[in-house]
Image (tube, rainbow, N blue to C red):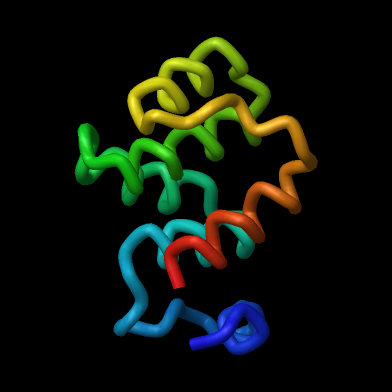
Length: 95
């Protein structure tokens, strides 16, 4: 699946079932369901990809302290671009 194909699915009522769960989390986030995205991030805490999603989600909610914790757990630096840019980077990374 390409980035454009992924973004085209955002108008569907549910994410495609064959997506990696982190991509499902990003799909839910893009559809304003932060809680569902956060549940996915929490489902495999300690796994780098999920911790990275977790960091992004807490950054999005404005909790920089908690976001920094999750960035460190994911082995990543605090993202300095916009939230939209970070979302796109993550989608491309996990496609």
